Amino acid sequence: MPLLTKPVASKRLLDMDFKRWCRDGDTIESVLNVAVENLQTIEGSSDITLGSHSFSGIRAQVWIPAGGTAGERYRVTVTCRMTPSGEELPGDGIVVLRG
Picture (cartoon, helix red, strand yellow):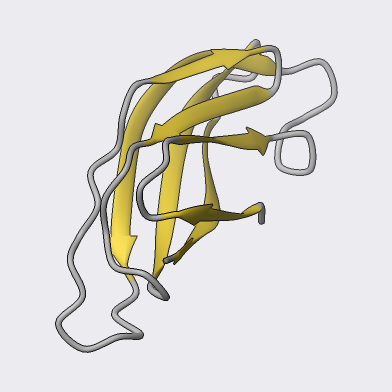
């Protein structure tokens, strides 16, 4: 699970490698869903929105724009359809914001 620490006021790319989840020879055919969950480790923390996403080979990337609450943790989940297996695989990463 990738861990990305970023300043609240900056935009950063979260890069996920699906190698450990996919079958040999599989690549990402499409990104089916991208979601974010506020883990609410800080009471009253604000949510974040996600920017654009892309993929290449067995890697998926999601832009994390500025915003959120310093010190909070967010789980980003990306679900991809693989080819040629056709499997739908979720991958997730944690984003930690700092002031």
